[in-house]
Amino acid sequence: MHKERIAKFVSNQNITIVDAMEKIDNNAKGILFIEDEAGCLVGCITDGDIRRWLIKTGDLQATVKMAMKESPKYLLQADKAKAQEIMQQYGITALPILNESENIVDIVLHADLIERQQRPERKVLKGVPVVIMAGGKGTRLYPYTKILPKPLIPIGDTPIIERIINCFTEYEIDQYYMTVNYKKGMIKSYFSDLQPDYRIKYVEETMPLGTGGSLKLIEDKFEQPLFVTNCDALILADYSEIYDYHSKTGNIITIVSALKNITIPYGVLKSEENGKVIGMEEKPKLSYFINTGMYIINPEIIGKIPDNTMFHMTHLVEKVMQEGGRVGMYPISEDSFLDMGEFDEMRRMEEKLNIVSK
Image (cartoon, rainbow, N blue to C red):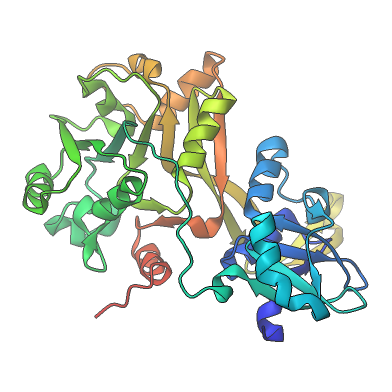
């Protein structure tokens, strides 16, 4: 592995959790190896480790040293030929190779060892209901949405809503409810012509009810937690893991949240009384967790939604919290949330999905 590529997988133990998430996003392999000041391997951290840390503490500015695993598996250069055997034995996908000074000189990736990596087994979620909110006008995407409803805006040659459903069908989910209003005939016609293997029940609004209000129109009674998601974003995450997390934590609502980094493009002054400058910070980065628009909710809370009233999912979240109910978040990285609400984000989505515009 070239030195430039190795650098994508290695960092020091003083970087923050936020910076580690960014590096893991960039290498796209879910892991980062950690060195001490002398450049010796001292630990590793995965996207799963970071997720567990954030759920436990919520601390984005902690150093990776606080959350990493110490004493990771490795091989010395002389034993590099054993890499595949060791990786299979311990179920790992990346293995650092060290010289005699314990510096990383190579990283062996499982994907590089075998030409066709077997797809990891996914937990089946068959029978879990999914509600897709597809009734909005998509005003941020004018003039496209004057012609097409937002759910049918194509990303490449496939409408965004079909891409969203395809993410769920990977878990054998075949039960979908789609709330529709604006240009609903076009949406229904598209799926009628598509003739998919899954079943869609349309929930038709006669007036705009918001992202949560139309849930009350669903006549079926749910017996288990359900996904509720917007129709304009792709979530690249393990849906079975999200669902298990919701069930194990006892949440009433789980919000899938994505890291969002915002860089202030100026030097920021720190001052005290009388305008005295006490410090400067050049282009600071602010980090927040944002609402992706995907939720898992327990079915009994649908009864808390008022009839025939504009009511958003955020209103439902606030109502549950006010009543003392547990609302949790499931954090994902910035690169795992692809939103097409604006044109710049649509282009980013196409780039991430390796779609070339013609």
